[in-house]
Image 1 (cartoon, rainbow, N blue to C red):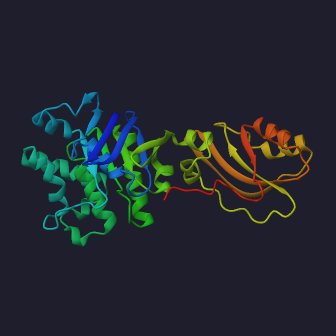
Image 2 (image 1 turned 45 degrees about the vertical axis):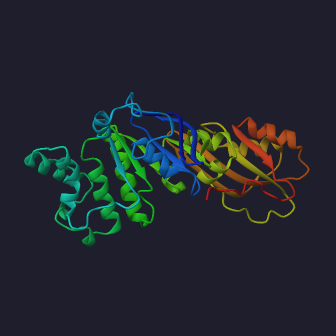
Image 3 (image 1 turned 60 degrees about the horizontal axis):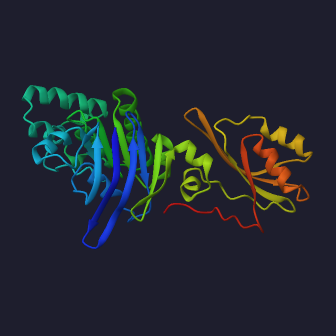
Length: 333
């Protein structure tokens, strides 16, 4: 697992990371999101100690890395694989030779190298491309080679720094499937640095919003969506704009309970003695939980407190839209 406590990183007078605290459990995928310049990539480089933190501690599998000697740190880094936005393959080496680089560095025997490389390329579905050079591979294939190389030393932790950025949808889905397989089949703990909310919704167990060098919100993905109407929550489960609702009063709904009775719409209508017009909706399952946002139209003469209480009884938070202005139209850039 990964434990980060009080992490700071400054370059001269500029503080890039300011007291970061978070943890990622064993065999979990956690995502760090935030706008450009928030410090996401700096955080990744600090976790694998490519950058020395200015302060704070970083522990991987119970071992505190920032206090290690140079020799011990080299050994500890073998437990941390990294995949970057650009796969950073050496263009004069084949796919197999690129994957073998870490194995050569630690002095693994040639026959063991061949077996390990074969297994890794097979796992990422590129065994038939073993002798191809990077220029002969697509962007998604190069990224899968980079992922295989990141796994070469059998790490228990994998850092994915914008690994799907710039890839087409099919290539992105391929990488995300591999990350989930690594978590589920091999028990690898994965930290995903990304600005793509679809990536977070697809693979992450937990998410943290990094902004101006600080974690401003974090938690399990489903919990973040249910408990707040923050920028992160809205970005994770965006609601399409509602059509004009005429004379009705517009309400925003958010599932606040992990499970909501699928017949809630009929129950609310009966309790309020009024039709509920669904103007826009997005309801999904995340793991075993449900998350949902809706825009509905109700009779404007209904008592607001009664409306809110009726929805609350169904595990749904209801808020009226004032003067047709939805203050929740926010997203993480």
